[in-house]
Image 1 (spheres, rainbow over the protein chains, first blue to last red):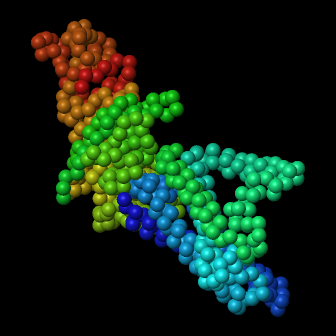
Image 2: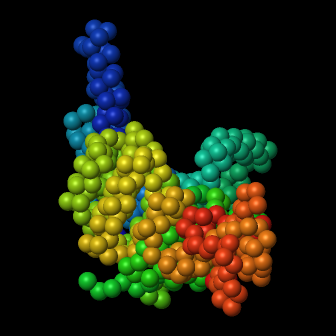
Length: 259
Length: 294
Protein backbone atom coordinates (compact mmCIF):
# COMPACT_ATOMS: atom_id res chain seq x y z
CA UNK A 1 0.00 0.00 0.00
CA UNK A 2 1.20 3.50 -0.80
CA UNK A 3 -0.27 4.82 2.42
CA UNK A 4 2.68 7.08 3.27
CA UNK A 5 2.52 9.10 0.05
CA UNK A 6 -1.28 9.25 0.21
CA UNK A 7 -1.31 10.23 3.89
CA UNK A 8 1.29 12.94 3.49
CA UNK A 9 -0.61 14.45 0.56
CA UNK A 10 -3.92 14.36 2.45
CA UNK A 11 -2.45 15.75 5.67
CA UNK A 12 -0.79 18.67 3.89
CA UNK A 13 -4.01 19.53 2.11
CA UNK A 14 -6.13 19.22 5.24
CA UNK A 15 -3.81 21.45 7.26
CA UNK A 16 -3.93 24.05 4.52
CA UNK A 17 -7.72 24.05 4.33
CA UNK A 18 -8.04 23.89 8.13
CA UNK A 19 -5.92 27.04 8.38
CA UNK A 20 -8.12 28.78 5.85
CA UNK A 21 -11.30 27.79 7.70
CA UNK A 22 -9.80 29.18 10.94
CA UNK A 23 -8.80 32.42 9.24
CA UNK A 24 -12.21 32.92 7.69
CA UNK A 25 -13.99 32.11 10.95
CA UNK A 26 -11.88 34.56 12.93
CA UNK A 27 -12.42 37.17 10.22
CA UNK A 28 -16.20 36.74 10.27
CA UNK A 29 -16.71 36.30 14.02
CA UNK A 30 -14.10 38.69 15.44
CA UNK A 31 -12.68 41.09 12.87
CA UNK A 32 -15.92 41.93 11.05
CA UNK A 33 -17.82 43.00 14.21
CA UNK A 34 -14.74 44.99 15.27
CA UNK A 35 -14.64 46.82 11.93
CA UNK A 36 -18.37 47.50 12.08
CA UNK A 37 -17.99 48.91 15.60
CA UNK A 38 -15.10 51.03 14.34
CA UNK A 39 -17.11 52.35 11.40
CA UNK A 40 -20.13 53.12 13.54
CA UNK A 41 -17.96 54.93 16.08
CA UNK A 42 -18.88 52.51 18.85
CA UNK A 43 -15.37 51.23 19.38
CA UNK A 44 -15.34 52.54 22.94
CA UNK A 45 -17.98 50.01 23.93
CA UNK A 46 -16.48 47.11 21.90
CA UNK A 47 -15.80 44.22 24.26
CA UNK A 48 -14.04 41.23 22.73
CA UNK A 49 -15.68 38.78 25.12
CA UNK A 50 -19.06 39.70 23.62
CA UNK A 51 -17.90 38.64 20.18
CA UNK A 52 -15.48 35.84 20.90
CA UNK A 53 -17.36 32.68 21.87
CA UNK A 54 -15.44 30.24 24.03
CA UNK A 55 -16.65 27.42 21.82
CA UNK A 56 -15.40 29.04 18.59
CA UNK A 57 -12.45 26.67 17.92
CA UNK A 58 -14.52 23.63 18.89
CA UNK A 59 -17.28 24.70 16.52
CA UNK A 60 -14.78 25.34 13.73
CA UNK A 61 -13.15 21.95 14.31
CA UNK A 62 -16.47 20.09 14.37
CA UNK A 63 -17.74 21.91 11.29
CA UNK A 64 -14.47 21.32 9.46
CA UNK A 65 -14.30 17.61 10.25
CA UNK A 66 -17.96 17.08 9.35
CA UNK A 67 -17.60 18.83 5.98
CA UNK A 68 -14.17 17.52 5.01
CA UNK A 69 -14.99 14.06 6.33
CA UNK A 70 -18.00 14.21 4.02
CA UNK A 71 -16.01 15.16 0.91
CA UNK A 72 -15.21 11.64 -0.22
CA UNK A 73 -15.81 11.10 -3.89
CA UNK A 74 -13.58 13.91 -5.20
CA UNK A 75 -10.64 12.54 -3.23
CA UNK A 76 -11.31 9.04 -4.50
CA UNK A 77 -11.40 10.26 -8.13
CA UNK A 78 -8.02 11.91 -7.76
CA UNK A 79 -6.47 8.91 -6.04
CA UNK A 80 -7.72 6.28 -8.48
CA UNK A 81 -6.41 8.44 -11.33
CA UNK A 82 -3.05 8.28 -9.57
CA UNK A 83 -2.98 4.53 -9.08
CA UNK A 84 -4.15 4.42 -5.47
CA UNK A 85 -7.03 2.15 -4.48
CA UNK A 86 -10.05 2.68 -2.29
CA UNK A 87 -8.62 1.12 0.88
CA UNK A 88 -5.54 3.31 0.92
CA UNK A 89 -7.64 6.34 0.11
CA UNK A 90 -9.97 5.62 3.03
CA UNK A 91 -7.25 4.97 5.59
CA UNK A 92 -5.03 7.86 4.52
CA UNK A 93 -8.02 10.17 4.85
CA UNK A 94 -8.96 8.74 8.23
CA UNK A 95 -5.43 9.06 9.60
CA UNK A 96 -5.01 12.59 8.29
CA UNK A 97 -8.36 13.74 9.70
CA UNK A 98 -7.52 12.09 13.03
CA UNK A 99 -4.31 14.14 13.21
CA UNK A 100 -6.35 17.27 12.47
CA UNK A 101 -8.80 16.24 15.20
CA UNK A 102 -6.09 15.81 17.84
CA UNK A 103 -4.25 18.99 16.86
CA UNK A 104 -7.55 20.88 16.74
CA UNK A 105 -8.56 19.63 20.17
CA UNK A 106 -5.21 20.63 21.66
CA UNK A 107 -5.80 24.11 20.20
CA UNK A 108 -9.28 24.06 21.77
CA UNK A 109 -7.84 23.29 25.22
CA UNK A 110 -5.11 25.94 24.91
CA UNK A 111 -7.68 28.44 23.72
CA UNK A 112 -9.97 27.44 26.60
CA UNK A 113 -7.16 28.09 29.12
CA UNK A 114 -6.37 31.42 27.46
CA UNK A 115 -10.04 32.38 27.37
CA UNK A 116 -10.53 31.42 30.99
CA UNK A 117 -7.47 33.36 32.14
CA UNK A 118 -7.62 36.50 30.05
CA UNK A 119 -11.02 36.98 28.43
CA UNK A 120 -13.83 35.76 30.61
CA UNK A 121 -13.06 33.82 33.76
CA UNK A 122 -16.62 33.73 35.07
CA UNK A 123 -18.23 31.70 32.34
CA UNK A 124 -17.71 28.09 31.27
CA UNK A 125 -14.85 25.80 32.35
CA UNK A 126 -11.87 25.21 30.04
CA UNK A 127 -13.47 22.13 28.49
CA UNK A 128 -17.22 22.25 27.94
CA UNK A 129 -17.92 18.62 28.86
CA UNK A 130 -16.50 19.33 32.33
CA UNK A 131 -19.97 20.65 33.16
CA UNK A 132 -21.29 17.11 32.78
CA UNK A 133 -18.37 14.83 33.64
CA UNK A 134 -15.81 17.08 35.35
CA UNK A 135 -16.29 15.64 38.83
CA UNK A 136 -16.83 11.95 38.16
CA UNK A 137 -13.42 10.87 39.42
CA UNK A 138 -11.87 11.97 42.67
CA UNK A 139 -8.69 13.08 40.95
CA UNK A 140 -8.63 16.39 39.04
CA UNK A 141 -6.09 14.95 36.56
CA UNK A 142 -8.29 11.90 35.86
CA UNK A 143 -11.28 14.19 35.34
CA UNK A 144 -9.32 16.39 32.93
CA UNK A 145 -8.11 13.38 30.92
CA UNK A 146 -11.56 11.77 30.80
CA UNK A 147 -13.21 15.01 29.67
CA UNK A 148 -10.50 15.42 27.02
CA UNK A 149 -11.19 11.90 25.74
CA UNK A 150 -14.95 12.46 25.76
CA UNK A 151 -14.54 15.69 23.81
CA UNK A 152 -12.28 14.03 21.24
CA UNK A 153 -14.72 11.13 20.89
CA UNK A 154 -17.64 13.52 20.51
CA UNK A 155 -15.94 15.41 17.68
CA UNK A 156 -14.75 12.12 16.16
CA UNK A 157 -18.38 10.98 16.07
CA UNK A 158 -19.31 14.16 14.21
CA UNK A 159 -16.45 13.43 11.80
CA UNK A 160 -17.51 9.84 11.06
CA UNK A 161 -21.11 10.97 10.65
CA UNK A 162 -19.86 13.30 7.90
CA UNK A 163 -17.82 10.46 6.42
CA UNK A 164 -20.82 8.14 6.26
CA UNK A 165 -23.01 10.82 4.67
CA UNK A 166 -20.25 11.68 2.17
CA UNK A 167 -19.47 8.11 1.22
CA UNK A 168 -23.17 7.36 0.86
CA UNK A 169 -23.65 10.37 -1.42
CA UNK A 170 -20.53 9.32 -3.36
CA UNK A 171 -22.40 6.30 -4.68
CA UNK A 172 -25.00 8.42 -6.44
CA UNK A 173 -24.97 10.67 -9.48
CA UNK A 174 -24.90 14.46 -9.00
CA UNK A 175 -28.61 14.65 -9.79
CA UNK A 176 -29.48 12.01 -7.23
CA UNK A 177 -27.18 13.67 -4.69
CA UNK A 178 -29.07 16.95 -5.06
CA UNK A 179 -32.36 15.12 -4.57
CA UNK A 180 -31.04 13.46 -1.41
CA UNK A 181 -29.56 16.66 -0.01
CA UNK A 182 -32.89 18.43 -0.48
CA UNK A 183 -35.10 15.49 0.48
CA UNK A 184 -33.28 14.07 3.50
CA UNK A 185 -33.66 17.15 5.76
CA UNK A 186 -37.38 17.24 4.93
CA UNK A 187 -37.76 13.58 5.90
CA UNK A 188 -35.75 14.16 9.07
CA UNK A 189 -37.87 17.21 9.94
CA UNK A 190 -41.09 15.19 9.53
CA UNK A 191 -39.63 12.39 11.67
CA UNK A 192 -38.69 14.92 14.33
CA UNK A 193 -42.19 16.40 14.25
CA UNK A 194 -43.67 12.91 14.69
CA UNK A 195 -41.33 12.29 17.62
CA UNK A 196 -42.33 15.58 19.24
CA UNK A 197 -45.99 14.66 18.75
CA UNK A 198 -45.40 11.26 20.28
CA UNK A 199 -43.56 12.91 23.13
CA UNK A 200 -46.65 15.02 23.81
CA UNK A 201 -48.89 12.01 23.92
CA UNK A 202 -46.66 9.53 25.73
CA UNK A 203 -43.60 11.17 27.19
CA UNK A 204 -40.43 9.70 25.67
CA UNK A 205 -38.88 9.94 29.09
CA UNK A 206 -41.12 7.08 30.14
CA UNK A 207 -40.11 4.79 27.25
CA UNK A 208 -37.02 2.65 26.66
CA UNK A 209 -35.80 5.27 24.19
CA UNK A 210 -35.59 7.83 26.95
CA UNK A 211 -33.83 5.38 29.25
CA UNK A 212 -31.41 4.43 26.51
CA UNK A 213 -30.57 8.05 25.71
CA UNK A 214 -29.93 8.76 29.39
CA UNK A 215 -27.77 5.65 29.59
CA UNK A 216 -25.53 6.51 26.66
CA UNK A 217 -24.79 9.97 28.04
CA UNK A 218 -24.07 8.50 31.47
CA UNK A 219 -26.97 10.10 33.31
CA UNK A 220 -27.60 7.48 35.98
CA UNK A 221 -30.50 7.80 38.42
CA UNK A 222 -28.41 9.31 41.18
CA UNK A 223 -26.11 11.43 39.02
CA UNK A 224 -25.94 15.17 39.40
CA UNK A 225 -24.56 17.47 36.74
CA UNK A 226 -20.79 17.13 36.73
CA UNK A 227 -21.00 13.64 38.15
CA UNK A 228 -22.38 11.84 35.11
CA UNK A 229 -20.76 8.48 34.46
CA UNK A 230 -17.73 9.34 32.30
CA UNK A 231 -17.34 5.80 30.99
CA UNK A 232 -20.80 5.78 29.41
CA UNK A 233 -20.17 8.37 26.67
CA UNK A 234 -16.72 6.85 26.12
CA UNK A 235 -18.26 3.45 25.49
CA UNK A 236 -21.26 4.65 23.47
CA UNK A 237 -19.06 7.09 21.53
CA UNK A 238 -16.52 4.39 20.73
CA UNK A 239 -19.24 1.99 19.56
CA UNK A 240 -20.87 4.68 17.40
CA UNK A 241 -17.46 5.65 15.99
CA UNK A 242 -16.53 2.09 15.06
CA UNK A 243 -19.92 1.25 13.55
CA UNK A 244 -20.02 4.44 11.45
CA UNK A 245 -16.42 3.93 10.41
CA UNK A 246 -17.19 0.42 9.19
CA UNK A 247 -20.23 1.66 7.26
CA UNK A 248 -18.18 4.42 5.66
CA UNK A 249 -15.40 1.96 4.78
CA UNK A 250 -17.80 -0.50 3.16
CA UNK A 251 -19.45 2.27 1.17
CA UNK A 252 -16.06 3.64 0.04
CA UNK A 253 -15.15 0.21 -1.35
CA UNK A 254 -18.12 0.57 -3.72
CA UNK A 255 -16.95 3.86 -5.22
CA UNK A 256 -16.54 3.80 -8.99
CA UNK A 257 -15.68 6.19 -11.73
CA UNK A 258 -17.67 6.95 -13.81
CA UNK A 259 -20.53 6.53 -11.32
CA UNK B 1 15.18 -3.20 -14.40
CA UNK B 2 13.30 -6.50 -14.08
CA UNK B 3 10.76 -7.12 -16.80
CA UNK B 4 7.23 -6.60 -15.54
CA UNK B 5 4.64 -9.36 -15.52
CA UNK B 6 1.77 -9.45 -18.02
CA UNK B 7 -1.75 -8.30 -17.24
CA UNK B 8 -4.12 -11.24 -17.46
CA UNK B 9 -7.78 -10.50 -18.20
CA UNK B 10 -9.75 -13.64 -17.53
CA UNK B 11 -13.44 -14.19 -18.41
CA UNK B 12 -14.31 -10.53 -17.84
CA UNK B 13 -17.94 -9.59 -18.44
CA UNK B 14 -19.72 -6.36 -17.69
CA UNK B 15 -23.36 -5.37 -17.79
CA UNK B 16 -24.97 -2.06 -16.93
CA UNK B 17 -28.48 -2.79 -15.68
CA UNK B 18 -29.71 -5.28 -18.31
CA UNK B 19 -27.42 -4.08 -21.06
CA UNK B 20 -24.38 -6.26 -21.67
CA UNK B 21 -21.26 -4.38 -22.68
CA UNK B 22 -18.53 -7.00 -22.41
CA UNK B 23 -18.94 -10.74 -22.64
CA UNK B 24 -16.32 -13.17 -21.43
CA UNK B 25 -13.22 -11.22 -22.48
CA UNK B 26 -9.92 -13.09 -22.27
CA UNK B 27 -6.78 -11.12 -23.01
CA UNK B 28 -3.13 -11.00 -22.07
CA UNK B 29 -1.27 -7.70 -22.13
CA UNK B 30 2.41 -8.46 -22.52
CA UNK B 31 5.08 -6.07 -21.25
CA UNK B 32 6.85 -3.74 -23.66
CA UNK B 33 4.32 -4.00 -26.46
CA UNK B 34 2.16 -1.39 -28.18
CA UNK B 35 -1.44 -2.51 -28.56
CA UNK B 36 -4.30 -0.97 -30.47
CA UNK B 37 -7.81 -1.53 -29.17
CA UNK B 38 -10.25 -0.84 -31.97
CA UNK B 39 -13.99 -0.80 -31.75
CA UNK B 40 -16.97 1.24 -32.81
CA UNK B 41 -18.64 3.80 -30.56
CA UNK B 42 -20.23 2.08 -27.58
CA UNK B 43 -18.35 -1.17 -28.21
CA UNK B 44 -17.05 -1.19 -24.62
CA UNK B 45 -13.44 -0.03 -25.07
CA UNK B 46 -13.56 2.54 -22.25
CA UNK B 47 -15.43 0.08 -20.04
CA UNK B 48 -12.68 -2.49 -20.57
CA UNK B 49 -10.01 0.10 -19.70
CA UNK B 50 -11.96 1.16 -16.61
CA UNK B 51 -12.20 -2.44 -15.42
CA UNK B 52 -8.49 -3.12 -15.98
CA UNK B 53 -7.56 -0.01 -13.99
CA UNK B 54 -10.06 -0.84 -11.21
CA UNK B 55 -12.16 2.27 -11.74
CA UNK B 56 -15.26 0.11 -12.05
CA UNK B 57 -15.82 -3.51 -11.01
CA UNK B 58 -16.50 -6.22 -13.57
CA UNK B 59 -19.72 -8.21 -13.35
CA UNK B 60 -17.65 -11.37 -13.50
CA UNK B 61 -14.09 -12.44 -14.21
CA UNK B 62 -10.87 -10.90 -12.95
CA UNK B 63 -7.85 -8.84 -13.88
CA UNK B 64 -4.55 -9.99 -12.42
CA UNK B 65 -0.85 -9.23 -12.62
CA UNK B 66 1.52 -11.92 -11.41
CA UNK B 67 -1.41 -13.85 -9.94
CA UNK B 68 -2.63 -10.92 -7.83
CA UNK B 69 -5.89 -9.12 -8.47
CA UNK B 70 -5.64 -5.42 -9.28
CA UNK B 71 -8.70 -4.58 -7.15
CA UNK B 72 -7.57 -2.01 -4.58
CA UNK B 73 -4.03 -3.28 -4.97
CA UNK B 74 -1.86 -0.15 -4.87
CA UNK B 75 1.34 -1.94 -5.82
CA UNK B 76 -0.25 -3.06 -9.08
CA UNK B 77 -2.42 0.00 -9.73
CA UNK B 78 0.70 2.11 -9.29
CA UNK B 79 2.23 0.35 -12.31
CA UNK B 80 -0.70 1.38 -14.53
CA UNK B 81 -1.73 4.78 -15.83
CA UNK B 82 -5.00 5.44 -17.63
CA UNK B 83 -5.35 8.58 -19.69
CA UNK B 84 -9.01 9.03 -20.53
CA UNK B 85 -11.57 11.64 -21.39
CA UNK B 86 -12.74 11.70 -17.76
CA UNK B 87 -11.42 14.71 -15.88
CA UNK B 88 -10.54 13.40 -12.44
CA UNK B 89 -8.11 16.12 -11.39
CA UNK B 90 -9.27 18.92 -9.09
CA UNK B 91 -10.53 21.74 -11.27
CA UNK B 92 -8.73 24.45 -9.27
CA UNK B 93 -5.36 22.73 -9.34
CA UNK B 94 -2.69 24.22 -11.60
CA UNK B 95 -0.96 22.09 -14.23
CA UNK B 96 2.39 22.24 -12.42
CA UNK B 97 0.70 21.15 -9.18
CA UNK B 98 -0.88 18.21 -10.99
CA UNK B 99 2.54 17.16 -12.29
CA UNK B 100 3.96 17.41 -8.77
CA UNK B 101 1.07 15.45 -7.29
CA UNK B 102 1.42 12.70 -9.91
CA UNK B 103 5.14 12.39 -9.13
CA UNK B 104 4.28 12.14 -5.43
CA UNK B 105 1.50 9.56 -5.68
CA UNK B 106 3.08 7.43 -8.40
CA UNK B 107 6.50 5.96 -7.79
CA UNK B 108 8.14 8.63 -9.87
CA UNK B 109 7.93 10.84 -12.91
CA UNK B 110 10.52 12.05 -15.39
CA UNK B 111 10.33 15.76 -14.60
CA UNK B 112 12.93 16.64 -17.24
CA UNK B 113 10.77 14.99 -19.90
CA UNK B 114 7.72 16.78 -18.46
CA UNK B 115 9.46 20.11 -18.95
CA UNK B 116 10.60 19.26 -22.47
CA UNK B 117 7.12 18.12 -23.53
CA UNK B 118 5.47 21.11 -21.88
CA UNK B 119 7.65 23.42 -23.99
CA UNK B 120 7.13 21.38 -27.15
CA UNK B 121 3.35 21.46 -26.82
CA UNK B 122 3.28 25.06 -25.55
CA UNK B 123 1.34 24.20 -22.41
CA UNK B 124 1.20 26.87 -19.71
CA UNK B 125 1.88 25.08 -16.42
CA UNK B 126 0.45 27.92 -14.37
CA UNK B 127 -3.03 27.49 -15.81
CA UNK B 128 -5.69 25.92 -13.62
CA UNK B 129 -7.07 22.61 -14.87
CA UNK B 130 -10.59 24.01 -15.24
CA UNK B 131 -9.30 26.78 -17.52
CA UNK B 132 -7.65 24.40 -19.99
CA UNK B 133 -9.29 23.74 -23.35
CA UNK B 134 -10.19 20.17 -24.33
CA UNK B 135 -7.00 19.92 -26.40
CA UNK B 136 -4.82 21.32 -23.62
CA UNK B 137 -6.32 18.87 -21.13
CA UNK B 138 -5.44 16.04 -23.49
CA UNK B 139 -1.92 17.43 -23.83
CA UNK B 140 -1.50 17.64 -20.06
CA UNK B 141 -2.69 14.07 -19.59
CA UNK B 142 -0.48 12.84 -22.45
CA UNK B 143 2.57 14.49 -20.91
CA UNK B 144 1.82 12.68 -17.65
CA UNK B 145 1.23 9.42 -19.54
CA UNK B 146 4.63 9.65 -21.22
CA UNK B 147 6.56 10.87 -18.17
CA UNK B 148 5.09 8.81 -15.33
CA UNK B 149 7.02 5.75 -14.21
CA UNK B 150 4.64 2.86 -14.92
CA UNK B 151 4.75 -0.39 -16.89
CA UNK B 152 1.36 -0.08 -18.60
CA UNK B 153 -0.05 3.08 -20.14
CA UNK B 154 -3.66 2.98 -21.31
CA UNK B 155 -4.59 5.75 -23.70
CA UNK B 156 -8.31 6.14 -24.33
CA UNK B 157 -8.79 8.45 -27.31
CA UNK B 158 -5.46 10.17 -26.60
CA UNK B 159 -5.70 12.68 -29.43
CA UNK B 160 -9.11 14.09 -28.47
CA UNK B 161 -9.12 17.80 -29.31
CA UNK B 162 -5.55 17.79 -30.66
CA UNK B 163 -4.78 19.45 -33.99
CA UNK B 164 -2.85 17.58 -36.69
CA UNK B 165 0.51 19.09 -35.66
CA UNK B 166 0.08 18.13 -32.03
CA UNK B 167 -1.07 14.65 -32.99
CA UNK B 168 2.07 14.15 -35.08
CA UNK B 169 4.18 15.47 -32.23
CA UNK B 170 2.50 13.09 -29.81
CA UNK B 171 3.04 10.01 -32.01
CA UNK B 172 6.74 10.94 -32.37
CA UNK B 173 7.12 11.54 -28.63
CA UNK B 174 5.41 8.26 -27.85
CA UNK B 175 7.79 6.30 -30.06
CA UNK B 176 10.76 8.21 -28.67
CA UNK B 177 9.65 7.53 -25.11
CA UNK B 178 9.00 3.86 -25.92
CA UNK B 179 12.47 3.49 -27.41
CA UNK B 180 14.14 5.01 -24.36
CA UNK B 181 12.06 3.20 -21.77
CA UNK B 182 10.14 0.24 -23.27
CA UNK B 183 6.76 -0.38 -21.65
CA UNK B 184 3.30 -1.31 -22.82
CA UNK B 185 1.01 1.22 -24.43
CA UNK B 186 -2.58 0.24 -25.07
CA UNK B 187 -4.16 2.76 -27.40
CA UNK B 188 -7.85 3.03 -28.08
CA UNK B 189 -8.52 5.35 -31.00
CA UNK B 190 -10.82 6.04 -33.89
CA UNK B 191 -7.95 7.60 -35.86
CA UNK B 192 -6.76 4.19 -36.98
CA UNK B 193 -4.86 5.34 -40.03
CA UNK B 194 -2.72 7.69 -37.96
CA UNK B 195 -2.01 5.21 -35.20
CA UNK B 196 -1.60 2.09 -37.31
CA UNK B 197 2.13 2.60 -37.78
CA UNK B 198 2.63 2.51 -34.00
CA UNK B 199 0.58 -0.56 -33.21
CA UNK B 200 2.31 -3.92 -32.83
CA UNK B 201 -0.74 -5.93 -31.89
CA UNK B 202 -4.41 -5.34 -32.68
CA UNK B 203 -7.56 -6.12 -30.78
CA UNK B 204 -10.95 -5.50 -32.32
CA UNK B 205 -13.88 -5.32 -29.94
CA UNK B 206 -17.22 -6.03 -31.54
CA UNK B 207 -20.49 -7.49 -30.27
CA UNK B 208 -19.22 -7.43 -26.65
CA UNK B 209 -16.28 -9.70 -27.55
CA UNK B 210 -12.77 -9.53 -28.91
CA UNK B 211 -13.12 -10.70 -32.49
CA UNK B 212 -9.52 -10.03 -33.59
CA UNK B 213 -6.42 -10.58 -31.47
CA UNK B 214 -3.18 -10.75 -33.37
CA UNK B 215 -0.05 -8.98 -34.50
CA UNK B 216 -0.74 -6.07 -36.82
CA UNK B 217 1.28 -7.72 -39.55
CA UNK B 218 -0.61 -11.01 -39.31
CA UNK B 219 -3.97 -9.24 -39.28
CA UNK B 220 -3.07 -7.08 -42.28
CA UNK B 221 -1.77 -10.13 -44.13
CA UNK B 222 -5.25 -11.63 -43.91
CA UNK B 223 -7.01 -8.61 -45.39
CA UNK B 224 -7.43 -8.52 -49.18
CA UNK B 225 -9.21 -6.41 -51.77
CA UNK B 226 -10.20 -8.40 -54.84
CA UNK B 227 -10.98 -6.04 -57.72
CA UNK B 228 -12.27 -6.71 -61.20
CA UNK B 229 -15.39 -7.32 -63.31
CA UNK B 230 -18.31 -8.37 -61.11
CA UNK B 231 -18.70 -11.83 -62.62
CA UNK B 232 -14.99 -12.69 -62.29
CA UNK B 233 -14.69 -11.31 -58.77
CA UNK B 234 -17.78 -13.18 -57.57
CA UNK B 235 -16.49 -16.39 -59.13
CA UNK B 236 -13.07 -16.02 -57.54
CA UNK B 237 -14.29 -15.07 -54.07
CA UNK B 238 -17.01 -17.70 -53.86
CA UNK B 239 -16.70 -19.48 -50.52
CA UNK B 240 -14.19 -16.97 -49.11
CA UNK B 241 -14.86 -14.80 -46.05
CA UNK B 242 -16.21 -11.65 -47.71
CA UNK B 243 -16.42 -8.88 -45.15
CA UNK B 244 -17.46 -6.08 -47.51
CA UNK B 245 -17.94 -5.04 -51.08
CA UNK B 246 -18.08 -1.96 -53.25
CA UNK B 247 -19.47 -1.70 -56.76
CA UNK B 248 -18.84 0.86 -59.46
CA UNK B 249 -20.61 0.12 -62.71
CA UNK B 250 -19.38 -3.25 -63.90
CA UNK B 251 -16.45 -3.16 -61.50
CA UNK B 252 -16.62 -4.87 -58.14
CA UNK B 253 -14.34 -4.91 -55.09
CA UNK B 254 -14.72 -7.71 -52.59
CA UNK B 255 -12.96 -7.33 -49.25
CA UNK B 256 -11.78 -10.61 -47.80
CA UNK B 257 -10.57 -11.45 -44.31
CA UNK B 258 -8.80 -14.80 -44.06
CA UNK B 259 -6.89 -17.10 -46.35
CA UNK B 260 -7.36 -17.01 -50.12
CA UNK B 261 -7.94 -20.21 -52.02
CA UNK B 262 -4.50 -20.87 -53.46
CA UNK B 263 -5.79 -23.78 -55.57
CA UNK B 264 -8.11 -21.48 -57.43
CA UNK B 265 -6.44 -19.71 -60.40
CA UNK B 266 -6.61 -15.92 -60.33
CA UNK B 267 -8.29 -14.61 -63.51
CA UNK B 268 -6.24 -12.09 -65.52
CA UNK B 269 -9.03 -9.55 -65.11
CA UNK B 270 -8.87 -9.70 -61.30
CA UNK B 271 -6.30 -7.93 -59.14
CA UNK B 272 -5.60 -8.69 -55.49
CA UNK B 273 -4.05 -6.29 -53.00
CA UNK B 274 -3.79 -5.95 -49.23
CA UNK B 275 -5.98 -3.42 -47.47
CA UNK B 276 -5.04 -0.99 -44.72
CA UNK B 277 -6.04 -1.36 -41.07
CA UNK B 278 -8.71 1.30 -41.16
CA UNK B 279 -10.56 -0.22 -44.12
CA UNK B 280 -10.20 -3.67 -42.62
CA UNK B 281 -11.65 -2.40 -39.34
CA UNK B 282 -14.57 -0.71 -41.07
CA UNK B 283 -15.60 -3.86 -42.87
CA UNK B 284 -14.89 -6.18 -39.95
CA UNK B 285 -17.11 -4.16 -37.68
CA UNK B 286 -19.88 -3.83 -40.22
CA UNK B 287 -22.12 -6.41 -38.61
CA UNK B 288 -24.21 -7.09 -41.71
CA UNK B 289 -21.54 -8.98 -43.61
CA UNK B 290 -18.58 -9.64 -41.36
CA UNK B 291 -17.68 -13.02 -39.98
CA UNK B 292 -14.32 -13.45 -38.39
CA UNK B 293 -11.88 -16.29 -38.28
CA UNK B 294 -8.97 -15.51 -36.00
